[in-house]
Structure formats: structure tokens, C-alpha cells
Length: 367
Image 1 (tube, one colour):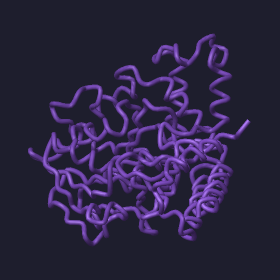
Image 2 (cartoon, rainbow, N blue to C red; image 1 turned 90 degrees about the horizontal axis):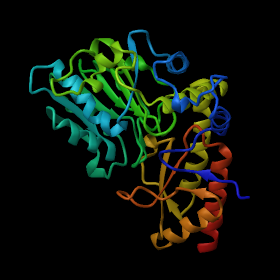
Image 3 (cartoon, rainbow, N blue to C red; image 1 turned 135 degrees about the vertical axis):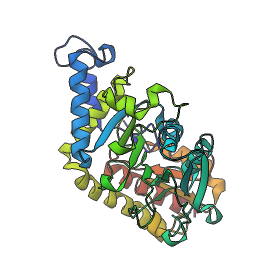
């Protein structure tokens, strides 16, 4: 049987160990006689699952005590609306949010925020085709913004921040809100540099349906009147993410992923593996004249690697041949075309090596 490597951008590959454990526990979790899917979210069994998941995530990211970890629903796109509904109320109305526009996801964020207040695009990479993060000295920030929004890894465009913006230096007094959906837990971060970190789970954490929000406590309690109570961060925090029924099975799988990541040595150890995987692929793309990556070298994503065949008439043939070799989900997003290899934490280096061998063979056969 051909070994399968899944390069989907999300829902994405999960660690094999996690899937095996979930399968073994599917009908009877730890002798309870129940599947996690059918447990009461307020029962002792599930309460132990969510408590462990929260504790492990706090440990993995070294989340300070003055931050709340929330388990929500709605995905990254939903959170693009939930963020302004929770933070615009910090300032007199109509409040302003600043955005650093780096690609498809900040574009979606901007459209959502415009429904709840003013938007200032403080810097944009649109004129260069979203191939880099705008230089920090080009950011034109508002004087009294409610927050500054970044997407620190653009899943579609393949652009990643390789620096941490500083409140007071880069953003004035405004807290930084970071959409980290597609690279959270892939690299060491200093949570204290951000006011809010959020992400959909379906990249590096678990299945679709769960959204993680890490929010500094002083930013709670400012929701606009239009904010639904189930998305009011203070209400959710006061109820330990149990104000409404949370996505229980997705939280369970996320908890298994957190435990797996701890067994790998934690975030610092997985970051080194991610650096090695990305280097393999980018080094080849830089050396070949058959493929190309268009992102500035100092802004390249370690998680999502877009690339193009110089002869795009070969795209369909490339994808069919890749599938025959067990290399799946390599088609780029419809908005940018080309190819994209998402190499999240759970993608072993063997998968990247297999992709590289195929790309070399395909290039040789079609040159």
C-alpha cells in the first residue's frame, strides 16, 4: 500500500498516535462506558478532559496567569467578528481598529471589523502581491486605536512574521490581536507581547469546530451590546468555557495533541523540526528553475509553502501524478492558484522528503 502524506491546509493532518488513541477510546473512554462524543459536558469525565487540555496548553505556550484560555466555536473567520465585538467597546464609539494587511486572512478580518467600527489599514502588502510583511517603519497607526490586528501566518499566501511586534514601539498603547490559526504551537512565542491570540484548531491543534482564544484579563468586559452572550469573552471566561455546550470531541482531540506535543519535547523541540522541514523544501525551490516560490525570503511561512510550476499548463498533470504517489491536497487555494504544501507539526520529515523526491522526478520527466 502506498504511504499517504496529507498536505492539506486544514482540516489538516493529525499525529498518527493521536488518531490511534482516539480510535482505541472511541467506544469506552477510560472505563467510563461512554464515548467522549456522548458525554455530558458538565459531567466529571469531560470536566477532567477540558481541565487537562487547558492546563497542557498553558504549559506548552507558557501562558501567563493573567491570561484566560477560552474554548470557543466559529473558527478563525467567526473570531474575526468576535474580536471587534469584544474590543471596540474599549474606546468611545465609533472606535477604530488598526490592521496590518498581509493577505487573504487580514482581508477577511478587515471586512468583518468594518461592521462594528472604523478600520485603519495602517500598512498593506497588497501592492507587492502579499509577498512580504510591510516594513515596520511604514506602519501608520491611529492615535487611539482599540487594538492592532495582525495575521502572523497567512495560510493562503504563505507569509509569516519572523519578528514579534512590540506594544509601545510598533503599536503605541494599543494591544496586539494576533490571528495565529495556522502556526500556533509550531514555534516559541512570548504570549505576554500580545493582548489576544486566537486560532481555529484545524491546522496544528485538532479537528474543525474548536477555536482557541488566549486573552489578557484586562481586555475582558468591553463587549459591544450587539455581541451575542455566547461570544462575550468575559461571560465565557466567567463560565470556564461552559456557558454553552462547547465542542467537546474537538477539545478532547486537542488535548491528545497537546499531550503528544509534550512527548515530542514541547514547542521548542517541534520548532527545530519545523525549521528543518521548511529548509528542505525552500532550498530546493530556490535551486530549481522548474518551480518557484514568490515570497520574500525573510517572510516565508514554515507551515504553508506555496509554489508554482513555471509551466502552469502542467498543473493538472502534476497533481494527478502526486496523488498517484500518495501525496495529497497539494492544490493551491483558488484565490492564488499554483500549489501549496502545508507542513504542520504532525507532518513528519519523511513526508517532506517524499514530496521533494516526487518534485525532482516530475521536473526531470518534464524538462
